[in-house]
Length: 312
Ligand SMILES: Nc1ncnc2c1ncn2[C@@H]1O[C@H](COP(=O)(O)OP(=O)(O)OP(=O)(O)O)[C@@H](O)[C@H]1O
Image 1 (tube, helix red, strand yellow):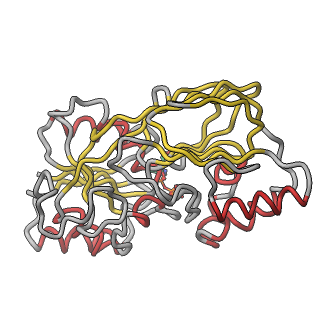
Image 2: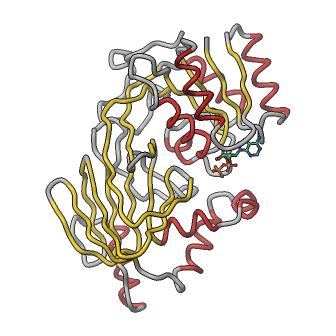
Image 3: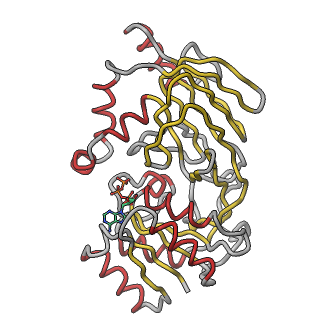
């Protein structure tokens, strides 16, 4: 049986209720549980493993998906149900980049029917994330952008407010180390991507793959003048391995030791850390994705040979 965990905010939306009824009419064996507050989605996901559910569908925004991932990661690999996504948030960055359907009816049908594939899960200290953690300026923008404005403007809100706030930012100094390198940096932005986009459609780590055992890192150093900012923006487009302001690399782990607290956004959830350690747990979760999903390094699964667990 499949467990649908619905964020209570979205549970009474007519399209969501219709999607559930339509799926059941089509033969889906699915129970629906609704969250009341923070923490519920993780607990319900963990319980699904103990109850022997083969699949859990996270119905909500990126925050709900992240909670469900954290609940699933409390289980042993053998007990861990596969994860499907019913995107009901305002950004839905992971669902968008996975090319999942965005309307509730089609998305729920896909989450129930499509097979799953193993993906990496990243862990920042004791918090898991599936998609991306951003730090510094990018995190300030996403966590301080009012929800109502995000909803109103969709993905554009981040860029608009981002441009305005760029003039008021302050840099974050710290020491970074990773497999094969280290540096001192005054950070403008640090993005650690298992997936490709965050902050409502910002493709910060476009080459990231969910199944390569690595995080794609985008490091943007602080700039002092308008001229530097122009150089930085050009480098952001070119994405050099080692530019004046922009560095890009891949690593299975990364450590940050900062001077001040660094604001972070972990799969859409805000937090702040002076120092942290991030690492990838390779192939830790089965994720329900379309056959031609672009976020995999091991090609498409047209013939079905690379699928590991069929939908039940
Ligand atoms: N019944 C509920 N009513 C209101 N908020 C809830 C309820 N249940 C859970 N929550 C809160 O919703 C948060 C997750 O929201 P989620 O990310 O799914 O939606 P969103 O914020 O609308 O989406 P996005 O992050 O894409 O903007 C949880 O951290 C929890 O605090």
